[in-house]
Length: 153
Image 1 (cartoon, one colour):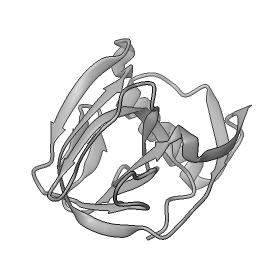
Image 2 (spheres, one colour):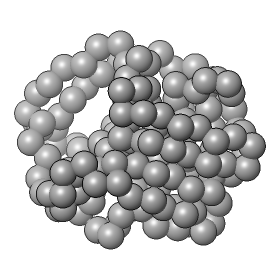
Image 3 (cartoon, helix red, strand yellow):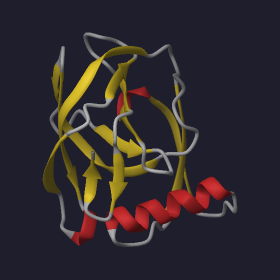
Image 4 (cartoon, one colour):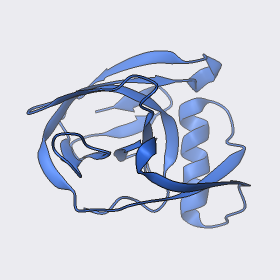
């Protein structure tokens, strides 16, 4: 399993419940919640996993960049002003079960730091880099998708 090259920031993950694990993070832990540009894969990355970050205005003209900007606008209800490039150590991801619920915080629709709870109806698969203390978590499959209302599926 490979992490998508481009990610769209959705917010901060607070809790993830799955068939075998329950992970909880406080906001100090900074487990960021991202999506791929088409809104079918969720990626949780620990800020400690990120190696380097560079802020730059959106300059890309690729189809993925356009999709990422469009998804951000749809989900957050405002335009993305910057693109952040970063590196992270990419290890092997292993499947650890299915996702039941995610709790996250986002400022979508301009509501500052509002918490949202999403129950996964279709039980997408969960992949992690480390079973005991994951720094990279990927949620993929089922009927997972992002819409203007939020995470669905």
